Image (cartoon, rainbow over all chains, first blue to last red; front, side):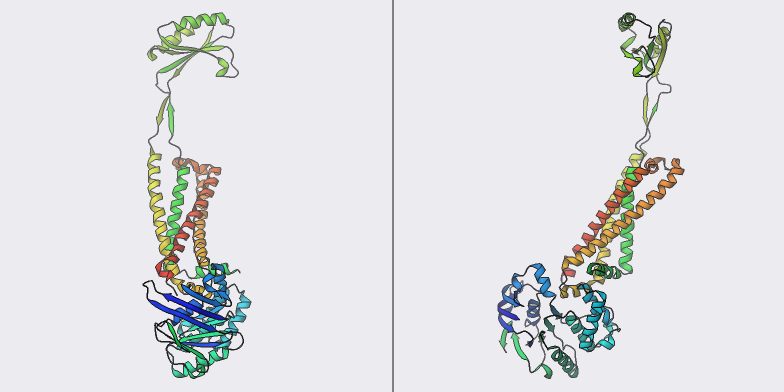
Length: 217
Length: 281
């Protein structure tokens, strides 16, 4: 599903952010990437999500080498990946409109989009708030909306960056339970976090990024 | 509704009061630019009045009877050519002036225009001469160059309006893209091609340019109707009474407006590659 080998990444100033990363994630697996701030977690997710072109090394996602993909195939791959970005900010619309916008922009017709919106909101437990202003949601609901947006187009890979930021312990556990529920079937999930892993996710494989290197699983 | 149409509608929905005001200004300025271009084609060409009143005689036309023999005509030609008071002499057939006329005529230029009248009287007395016409010198009088002044003013307006219009367009697009930045970020994360938004912004520019052109076409038609009933009021813009010209100029400026709108759109879309929008996650 995902295979990373000899991945290196440096900033324009020559600072090494990722160094010789080797990684393998199987289809349907949920994996947690741990590490302190600025350890390269978000960058790694950006590289896996084909948002950032790799500089050195190989990244295979769905059997496709990200480094060698042309622009069209790169976009096609991105459309099969769901991303929850760190510090997610929703659009100033209702919850429903947020998800519908993405689906319509991806070419879904109104009825088709409607169906997928409801499914995504049901999955994340936001169905009752679908008419609410997204900017006025609580922290946990905002994260739920971000996850709804990431899963609404039925991706094969879900990349979630810092989903527990600003949440109380109980809320973290709730998001962890949500991620566990979604980890059924073909969906591969990678969760990056700098804090402690909530109990619900403790059973899954973890890797630790330190100074741009994988320190241990 | 296709994806592009949906996104275009969303982009239009992101127009706020400030961007709308800037786009309105830009549209009006573009309209003024196009109107100035149209005016160039409507100005009456620098009118040249020709006056013969009070002017000295330039030539005398001596019409000959068709009954005259060619020998007589030849003889007169030789005699008159030798005269000191005639500077130039040539023979022409009268039909060259009037298809129904017959016979020939001498066209002679007097040495001294003041003596033309005496010469004409003398030729009138000759038997075989049917008519003598004194042709005074035509004096071309160009009307004061109002048209030149208008042209220079129009050029200044052209430069000023297009520069101001593009400036307003750029500011307007900046405002619009700022309001749409959340959606742009989401589109990028979703794997929507960058060129999709680029094309939409250009399309918006084209639409505004086209609207300016269509509006100008309507205004030109209105002025055409007014000019038809009151041509004197539009003496400087004589082209307004010509329907075909109105149509051709109208369509030309409409096309020009569309192209300029597209250029303005390109200018706006180029902001997407600027630091501010390129840095969006």
